[in-house]
Length: 115
Image 1: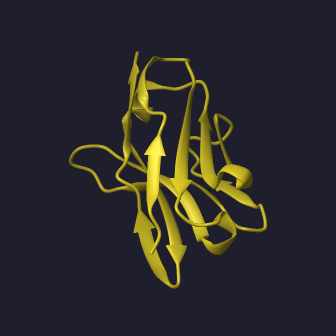
Image 2: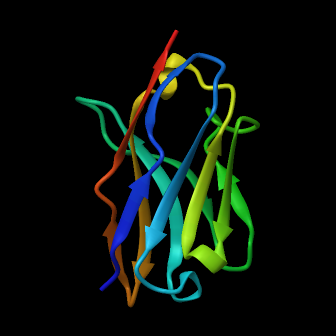
């Protein structure tokens, strides 16, 4: 089992920044395929960014150049630094990781960007 707890969401003006954290109950080196997703009402959850254990990162085109994903191994946290936020970034943001071939999700954190 893995518990993932997101934090750092909130209300911000367009152009502002937020830093999301996903605290894992296990060492990050044991969790594969960690990434961030987001969802708005009436829409499917969409992938935002991922980082593999080796360090390679990938981003959705909509956030490339504005968001940065990283691992804080000492703190067992996956971090998403979000800069130059846009109103269309408003969503509930979820952290996901895989452990022993099962996917685990956090409860989500709300990000609201006022334009």
